Amino acid sequence: MVRTIAVASLVGALALAAPGLALAGSGNAGLGKSTSSIRLAQPSGVAGAAAVGWPRYGDVVGFDTSTNETAYPYVNLKCYQSGALVAEGWDGYFDGALGDRMFGLYSPIWTGGAADCTAWLDKYANGRWRQLASTSFHVSE
Image 1 (cartoon, rainbow, N blue to C red):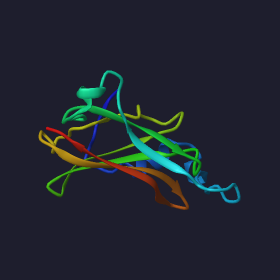
Image 2 (cartoon, rainbow, N blue to C red):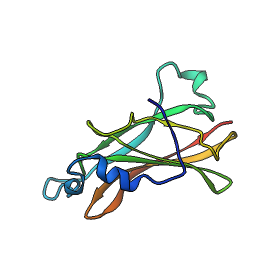
Image 3 (spheres, rainbow, N blue to C red):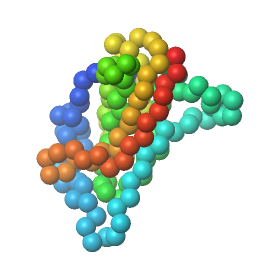
């Protein structure tokens, strides 16, 4: 199921979506260096010359993520046109999370055109969200 990115925060719903989420993310104290990464996942079939101009408005994207900070990472994606927020979405990037780890590059406010997006890999701990890593990309028309 592909979700349309809504311009509404689902933070409250996310906190309820993952059992034990409030207990997750105590870091990895004493376990060595903390590492986290996120990057735009290029879908199969989009390579070489086809990758130029990708992603485009209306495409669906996902992310490759990695972290040793929490067992329950989330991705928060925000897209802007001329400085105005036109799309935002959240999805859990762990087994058992609700959703499909995919984001549609469109919304009721974003009805066309290019945009600039940033995705953050986040964790929830001690009653607040903490950003672990980020990636930014341009969405073509």
